[in-house]
Image 1 (tube, helix red, strand yellow):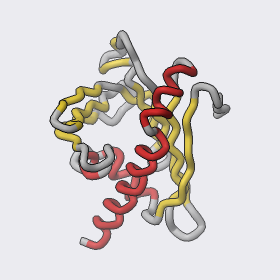
Image 2: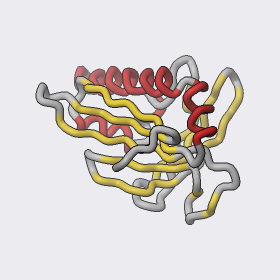
Image 3: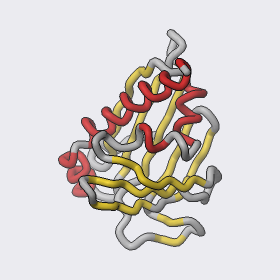
Image 4: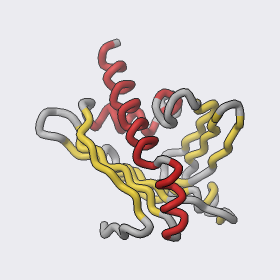
Length: 157
């Protein structure tokens, strides 16, 4: 994948958890509320239909304000790659004002952990800059840390 520095925001980090466990966290609705938004914000609803064209719908609670996020999966490669977007709702219904397409990639790290890459692709440079100013790197970095910590807590149980 060729990234466009004017419209794509991305980072790579090595996480301690194995990718099979991270994949489970990303693809089972009961896990999403534990990591998907930076605390103290919350996910109050998740609906996943894990197939290309299937829904990835969440409802955020940000300081008491509910934010409904409907999207669909565009690409699924088990334990390697998830691509989802808010450009469409289930049934390929286009959305009037899409924000981004998210790409989560995972591969094995030499120490048993996971090389984790998160990318947000935007339609315009202005939208990417807005997302950057909203705190993409801090926010998505926090989500990666929360994901890693949560996944490792599952192993400890």
